Image (cartoon, rainbow, N blue to C red; front, side, top):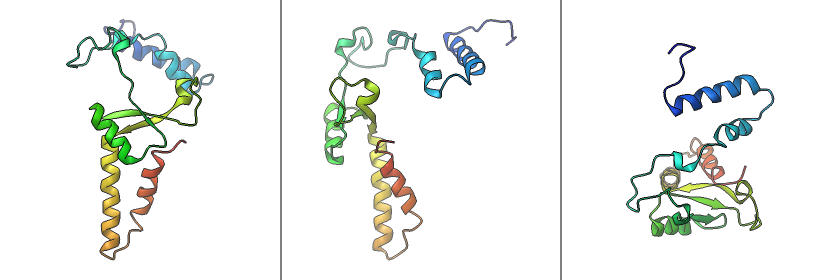
Length: 153
């Protein structure tokens, strides 16, 4: 694509805007500010609808249910909530945050089935090595980092 030719898609335009912003304003903006400035004017309705059986997913935001899991929930409770709601992931709500907190202070992350499965498989590996009398020293750093993935930075 020639330098003077304009982008053909909204994605290309956004990409060029991101590159320009990062090149020109890199010293003045933090990484969060860079991303926020790029996406602040994009409407949710501009994203393509999912293949949801409920249809009209983004046409009326009042129909979207926000699934939350409290930060003090057990792993069992998290799995039950995800299963009951038939979702693969949910927001983790900080139970210590006030009710009127902004979204960035209210939510501390996302819990997802895939992450839970990987963590459980890793824990079973560590346990199996210990039971067989081997050394689990090589597995310990990974186990501790998995625990950190569910904690607030």
